[in-house]
Image (cartoon, rainbow, N blue to C red; front, top):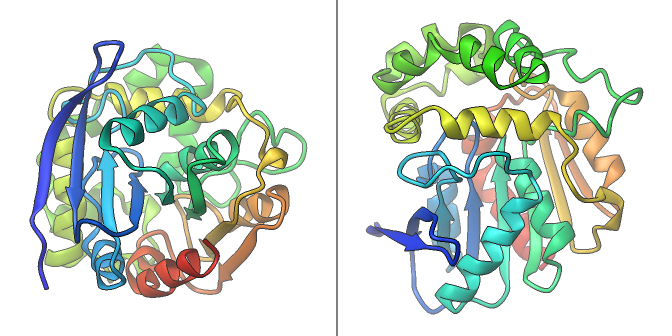
Amino acid sequence: MTYDETASTLTLADGRELDLRRRGPSGGDVLVYIHGTPSSAAAPSALAEAAHARGLQLVSWSRPGYSTSTRQPGRSIASFATDAREVLDRLGIDRVHALGWSGGGPHVLSLAALLPDRIRSATSLAGVAPYAETSGELEFLAGMGRDNIEEFGAAVEGEEPLRQFLAPFVPALRVVTPAGIVEELASLLPDVDRAYCTDEHGGELAQAFHEALVVSEDGWVDDDLAFVRPWGFDLASIRVPVHVWQGSADLMVPFAHGVWLASAVPGAVAHLLDGDGHLSIAVGQAEAIVDALLASG
């Protein structure tokens, strides 16, 4: 069964606009999908189809600065929860499951920590660990591909060095093809992920890059800056069910990040998989991921 995706613009109380998407059966439970970095509100089809087959409607939005969503300079990971509460209130949605992939991982944990009354279960899928809060506990850059090591290094230096680093990547990703993804992200893709850069899955990833950067790179910049600053909440305060999924072959977010997160979030269920990468885990494990979040919420 296929479902049309409804795209709209939601104007928040402060005047900012969000690029909002809804897809799937109406009237049932809702899964909030939180996209990666850089990306847009469009969810990967494997995750969307697994959710829809289980009666879930997907709700997602492009974070500030991505796609047509208004930039919010200086935003933090915690500020995502403020937007999420307003979105859910405006849509008349009470409690939801939530899943964040990659750069969406920190943001889904902000919902678990700051909106416990609205979150039934939360899933961090190949999500990055905190930078500031793991000082002395985690070798943050160890195991990352070269491009991500340099990107995080630039983010630590500040906005202008980061923009200079991203400058050659932005125009390339605005027009990248599925075949070109392997070339553009060469240092970040193990063989298991390269195998998923097909016309279908690679095409979805390319389209998400196109949408994310159609106006500017501001969302990418602000995500990276938020990752390396204090997140604004305490992981140890989380009491809602949390699942942490991470693959050992991931070169974008190293395996050690998943291990650390699973130990830092009280009661987290760890799914630490041998041989999976950043893309392969999201596509190949989609049904198991959705089943796990439903079973705990």
